[in-house]
Image (cartoon, rainbow, N blue to C red):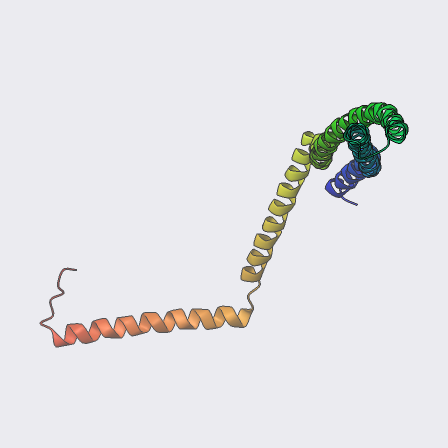
Length: 239
C-alpha cells in the first residue's frame, strides 16, 4: 500500500471514530427531545382535563347563584301572596322558610364552587404557561440539535482532511518526486541510446547502396554542367 493511501486510510479511520463519538450525544439529545414531546402531549391532555373541571366549576357557580336567587324570589312571592290573601299565611310562611333554606344551601355550595373555580383557573393558567415555555424550548432545542449535528459532520470532515494533510511528510514527498525525475531521465537516456544504436547498426549492403546513390547524384550534376557549357558561348557566368 502506498504512502498516500496509508495516510488516507488512517485519516478515514480517525474521522469515523470522531463521528461515532459525536453521534452518541446527538442521538441522546434527539431522544430527549422526543421524550419532551411526549411530555408535551401529556401536559396538553392534563390541561384539557383541568379546563374541563374549571368549566364545570364555573357552571356550578352560575347554577348555585341562579338557584339561590330563584329560591329567594319564590320566598318573596309566597309572602306577597299571603299578604294579598291568596294563600294561607301559615302555609306561606312554612313554604317561604323552606325556600330560604334551599337558598342558603345553594349559597353554601356556591362558595365552594367559587373556590374550586379559582383553583382550577390558577391551574389552567400555570399549565398554559408551562406548555407555552415547553413548546418554545422544544423548538429552540430542535434547531440547536440540527445545527450541532451539521457542525459535527463538518468538524469530522475537516478534521479528516487536516489529519491527512498533517500526516504528509513534505521531505519524503520531495524525495519521491526527485526519484521520479531521476527515473524519467534514465528512461529518456535509454531511449536515446537505443536510437543511436539503431542508426549505427547499418549493414555493408546499405553502405554500398548509399555510396552508389551519392555517386550517381554527382555524375548527373556533372553531365548537366557540361551540357550547359556546350550550349553556351563557353563562358561561365558568375554565380
